[in-house]
Image (cartoon, rainbow, N blue to C red):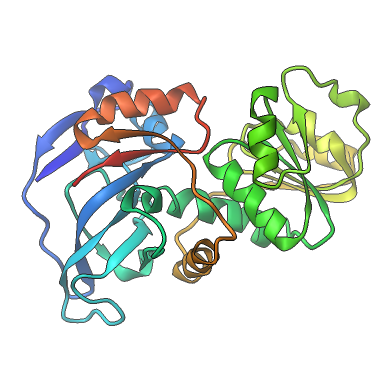
Length: 302
């Protein structure tokens, strides 16, 4: 099978297509014929900075069809269409086949294509856990979502609106009409806004761009800030009397099932910016690195 592998960190150009044997499954695993892979910022960052043990197959998000089931597996069967974010430490998504435990999987939303479905797991779980596990967002609260038109941001916007929050998106003006079409109540243009003149009356900030110096001061006293990148300054948080933290998502099949239900009930839409073939993975990672995507980018495998 074809797989996108890297043996040495330092540059995206170190990524190559290799031929590997089809994985053999353990009793607690399933074999998945991968149909598409979601592309996330960590995929290019890990090739440059070496987050994972080398060599490895790049990627974490998949959609596909179960082709074989281990003897100890329950709840899944051959032919099931699934999505999932694979074991973080091992990665392994950008390949024609994947062997994985079912605790990383959920059934694919019935109303999505495989390409759309592959865009869901990591970004949606990150948004869900940030909003509800870390920020404890409640109906009627006012939240700023940084990079609102990005992959994680669009999920965060839609989950927050579903919850009944007032959502302000940090984005460029060119995305204003698009973001309002998915429920954003207002936008702040991060390129031109004078943050010092914005009234600090927000309950929560969801930050995916390490913008704590700009966004923590937008919170009211006792407000909550969470970052999915850099750890915020404790001094800054204390100065503004807010709660501030950062976190890394984790695979959670129960949360993923809840998200699938919301998608099937049309509470959440999926937006694909660009699709690439598996053999174009290097170009796809470089495009992801540019950071200008509206929604998600996807590798089409089979």
